[in-house]
Structure formats: structure tokens, C-alpha cells
Image (cartoon, rainbow, N blue to C red; front, side):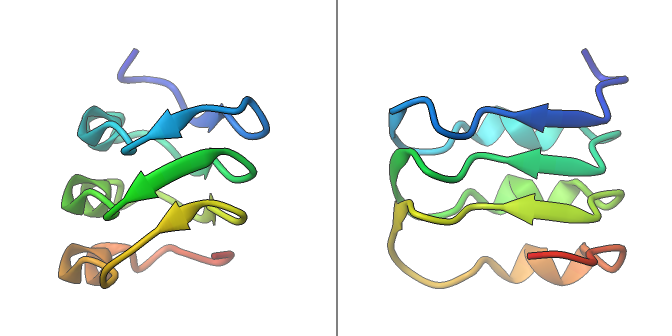
Length: 79
């Protein structure tokens, strides 16, 4: 599924950490995983999504700092 450009898993009552494997979906321009019970830290692998323009992660229970790899997300328009 490396050609996937949009992925929404929002509002599904998922819990636990965000899978680091999402960072392998390098064609994503939109990723939404808000309104779930995700927790822990954001995986630095999400910084590999350099085509990402929109990232929705509201209403989750993340802790820690935003990974420095997010500095590579220069196409980001909506966070």
C-alpha cells in the first residue's frame, strides 16, 4: 500500500501507541487518527511522511515532545 495518499482511522476507539509502520506510507498527503485513545509518544518515523500536508491527531493522549524528525514535514499545511 505504498501508493496510498489519504488515510483516516479517526473516531474508532483505537488505543495504545501509534504504529511506527505508518511512517512507511511515504505517499500520504493526509493522515487522520484523531478522536481515538492513542497514547504514548509520537513515533519519529512519521517524519518520513514528507509529502504530508494534513495531520489530524486531536483528542488523543500523547505525551512527550514532538519528534525532531517532524522538521522534515515542510509541505505541512494543517496540523
